[in-house]
Image (tube, rainbow, N blue to C red; front, top):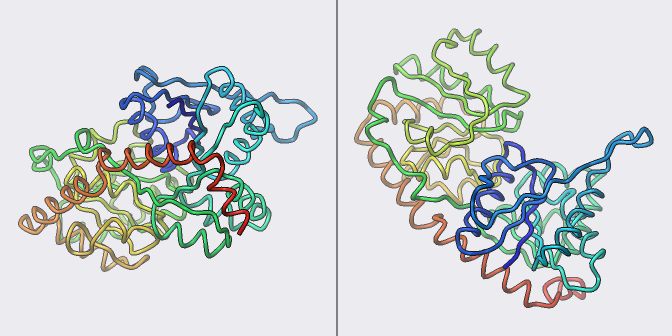
Length: 378
């Protein structure tokens, strides 16, 4: 199939998943066209079957804000015509699904279905904003197909927006051949705790500092912070205030997490909300036990005390205790590590998940709009 994929190219879960999906599909023989304002993070343009089409946004004195959604729609329609795309797959509802709808209407001479994948904050934050609620609901109802990454997200979308369109749950995935354990690296040097995020308030990066300060009371360890965002500065200041700055490394944004994660001994994910928890899945594939919060779709991924730990949001003591146990009990760490790797391999490996996307594409492309029409007629 010829598939157009649009996502935010920045360091965030939705863009990473979209990029990984496109590259996996290309390896399976599909022709993938990324359409965005910048080359998506983690995208290797040298991958056979991958094409990138930049969206250029003109700036005029009349426009206070550049009309990206309109430029994107035009570029989508242009690429669809030139490359004879079979469908558009947009990640993150606003504004991508509206742009896809416009592109669809701009190509009336041929059918161009589009699928919207909901990743979390496009529903829980952006879509919940009264200014965007009507357009978010409209864009979903006009999609030819809707997928989301967890059962939690499906239920939240149905309850909050009241839409009747069928929503397919296709979880995030990981390449278990690329993300794999490195036991030798884990045994070298200090014990290492990893945090990965875009450092927004919802990720509770400051909790990482408080938790690590307690872990340091019992364990010679270091904290590795991968990513960047608005809370990096406050986190660096807090590390100094807690006198742990010598043991905290801020790496900034990283393109090759498959090289970094296997060297870690545990992952800390203290988020206030996670629609799925992609960082935890990638860590689990590498045999790195996650200590996360019991929120959103994370319980769909992690089984408490089996392949990781789930503690309440903001419970510094409990999260610190779990990390300390993992770093001081080799037997426990080995058991959780093996179980985490097994979960990734048996439930979320690309060989299991990518065919589900392919089957869904075939269903939508062969439906002649019946998925959407059925919902609208109810």
